[in-house]
Image (cartoon, rainbow over all chains, first blue to last red):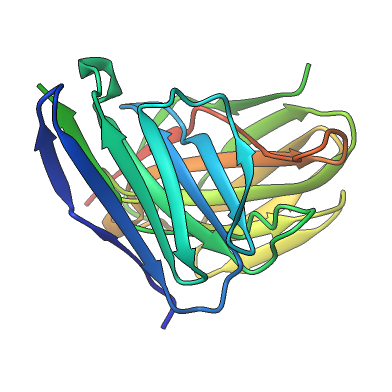
Length: 116
Length: 112
């Protein structure tokens, strides 16, 4: 199993809603990532979890709240988002974790988020 | 400042017409250079990692090469299914988190 599974595939939410994005992998990877990608732009790193601990927060606004319940799951909780937060949200995982980012990462198919 | 520049921005080829994509980089000590392929609305798919100048890697119709200043992704006899955006990223030795620095990508279209 070399898949990173993200749900939902599409999400439309209002600015006052609370929603969560989910990500799951069963490859035994100990580093998991959230990226945000706008059209015609490369992925932009948001958060990195290494061995279930948050190791990198790229100064992401607090309306995005990550959670790593166990080594296979990664969530991104969304609250009071703005229309400019509309984007493709990508989850990724890689084998190595703590200290060094192994960027031979496997990406999920993403969640297309629209904030209205 | 660490930087990655990909060229061309877009490339249209006929099926079977070989070509190369370029990724130029300036970084304070290269740890690795990575090529990904991304289809519209999908997540990037890992292709290659290159670590040192002179290194080459191949996968089907793709071959990636690395020098001290740039990497090339050679596409031999492309097929329509090779149409995608190809992203290059580098990881530097310096810095605490060694995060990826991405190029803007080359959008490749292969016509049948």
